[in-house]
Image (tube, rainbow, N blue to C red; front, side, top):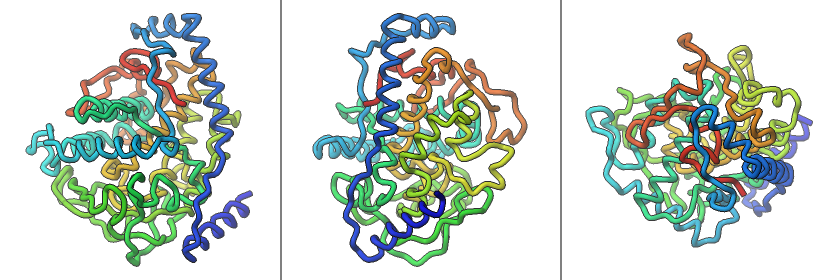
Length: 402
């Protein structure tokens, strides 16, 4: 199977190299069916009030119903006008003044940068931690809320179903460089492979990008905040965290990554393989690519890391600075959807599950995370306990995925 995946990758890369890419989305029937099943089970838990009762045990309210829930949709299913409205709202945040004080984050230059700085500041306590999924759920919801409340966006946060574009991400409606995409590849610039994984294994072969993103609605986009942990060749760490280091956003779109780890089959395996269904620890470790016992020897990307390094470059190849590239939001919409599907296969049993400590890979050693822990989003949203972010129907949330 591994050799077959590599053969398909080689075919895809050759097609792009010869300029013959003709995008055909791959079916995502597996994950779409699982999402429908989860929605049915969630509907039952809402209708019989068992979800409300379970949330109330932890003092979380539930007034949302399936009838008034907002619907997050797959990006490629949006109309052209809906895609343009979404992009316009993001550019609106990029033009608005920042709220983060400059003495705390000298590199922040816009309201959009507030969100980038928040992620940078929290990186060591929100990745490979017990709150990884809940923190990012709150974070993308805060971003969605800012788009709506501060920039007049009347839609909801879309998601990118990775499997649709796994064979040809550069030719896809997400990253083909058209006006309705989320930007194209970087201009070609010779470069070495990208060492994406902690283990140093699986260095991503150089693609046909590497330079500044010059096509699509964000052409010429600048990343203001200093690099924190860059992996892309030629990018240097900034002189100070959250400093000002303006540079063009670079991409190097990689089907080598996506056609191995972002397929629908990979997502279905994550959501159905008995090895990852016993509890949330096994599920979230596989989603992120490993755990403390194996990640330093692993060459497995997992859907989370693979998504980020499908576009890669800078800041896309910097774990702290990921949100500096607008593809981040579509990617983490799908991360949240994947967790939502997993949760709602057993809506009550999996509702309050948490596993992991409060620090990245438990370094430095820390206590186990708890549903009573506060999620800190600084200048993007108020602090709030984890328990308020474990259901898309509970607390301030009221959304489902189509």
